[in-house]
Amino acid sequence: MLAATALRGAILPADAELLQCFAVSRTVLREALRTLAAKGMIEARAWIGTRVLPRHRWNLFDADVLAWHFETSPGVEFLRSHSEIRIAVELESTALAAIRRTDEQAEALIACAQTMGEAESAEEFARTDLQFHRTIAEASGSPFMASISALVELALTAVFTINSPVKDPLAMRATVAAHGRVAESIKAGDAETARSAMKAVISDGLERQVNARKTKP
Image (cartoon, rainbow, N blue to C red; front, side):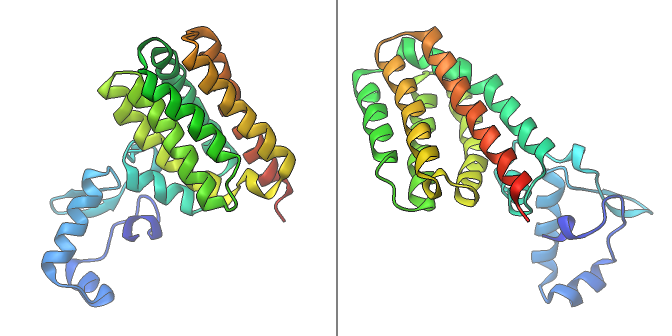
């Protein structure tokens, strides 16, 4: 991506040079620059040019920006920050789901947790896990929770695709069991137990990701 490959704080080349470099039309270039500006990645100023903004200015609640971060193998601090926002959002979402869920949603979560245990590939596991967390967000009854959770979980899919418990039978069993506890707590209408179970799911996931980074050659 243009802004991601440029040095942060650098001024992008003039339009003519970018047009030649990427072999695109002026319309396509302008649309790309507008998109990056909307994501907080670049800033255009008269007489100065278009500057690449520092990472802390990027909109991390944008699905594309999150995906790009995970494509570049994020460090431990970023993974920890990602888990922190998940805890802030998903624990409350899970507690609300335990109170507001429908019978159909409760059964869907139980079935989803069971399906996770049958996954044979990282991609299959990630898709099922994403559906599990989205169902919880929908069951919370809050459109804001659902919207925020959807963006956060897009990044989660990338994490599990790269570092999936499917490759480790012991981790796989533990992860499936942990999700099962969340589903059962929601079905039972036990908000506090559901909240604790979700925190365990997120914390265990972070620990696995951090350990994978430490052992990566």
